Image (tube, rainbow over all chains, first blue to last red; front, side, top):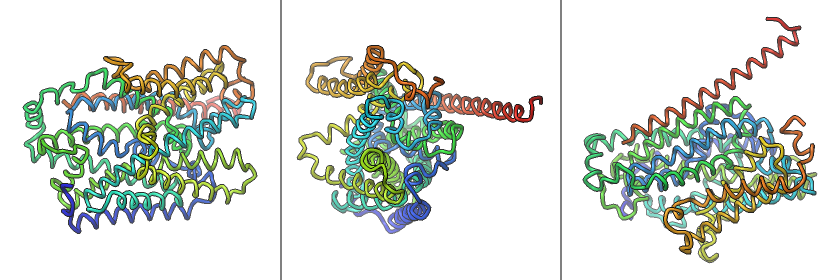
Length: 491
Length: 43
């Protein structure tokens, strides 16, 4: 790696202080967490500021500070418009999903599925189990990709092996999430989003100062390739990726569980509005960083390392450590959120609701902690030995957002607003959405779908087929029972 | 190059804040209304 061994003590001490602060938050979370409600939804006391921070930090992952900077480095400005799809997802959620979910006020997304689609002949248990398993598989495997990214960064900065880098990441994140639960996760997200925002913004004047200003950056990009300031990605490509992100965000269980943890519906509305402010700032910063690095270092062999190289070569020890802190924060905040959701699906939905409904509060709390440790450690081994599963891990990582978007966005949206939608229809829709994502993906891979259609992300046919399955299935079968509708409609 | 994106972002933020404020206003009016009813109505 190009940057091994070049960091100084200032850099390392700044990072250590950051990690100590995160551990301190984890300890605070541990000392203030008394039961399962506390662990999974922070006793519903998250306010708008921390709420906005945790929604933003959860959404932004290694993909934002590593992958997206790399994409801007390679292709220029056009990729920035995928954010608009995300924001459309957030606006739909703001109006039609998030406040309603908060009003419902349970703990997990399968809780909602089990109540709204509870007439499955087993009191909602079948639908709960189906959705919980879907969440655990898609999300737990996805964590392995975040670990791989962290391993690469630790290796690049400190010269340790990839495995040791990943192990450090796993130890840190399990330590504060398993013991601190949602309270620690949300509060650490607050610190992390501030670091991400400051890191993304503070780099801009330094990079542009080195280049000679925004105008100079533009003209240098044009001299490299005029498409860098135009549409290197076609509008259709950007649009379909944007749709994928938008649908993914609309029904994302790891965002919904944060919605549940807020004080009330109005807090949810303000938190979503404020999260858009963080996103505009970070999206702009990340795009300028990627394009500036292209001008300053036009021949990087690994564009994904642009942010790391910038931190060490351009920003100096303190600011550089801050930006690396931002990159690691993006990973930690996403992984801790996914761990809480996957652990909730295992401990709350499968253990407490299906296997041992009589469990004491103390036992439930520890079931959640053990589940966090489990969903934290399994992806570590998947990242190390995933190849043994014949590409299955890489496949789920690639498609998890499409799978979750295609299976959860419509059941949440329609389930909350259309009283004719019933359980068989929703089950058919979720299944159809899931299968459509797989078929579309493999058809593109196998060359069956080509040309313009091949530019369409699998989430789009997935959502359409889920919608069709839900509507047709619901109208072909009996109306939902009064019990299933009562919590959501006037019946 | 970046300016149109920032403008779109500001539009989204404004729309979201206006919606949140509008819904907040609705909730407050309902609360005031129910308090009035409890008191026997009237301003």
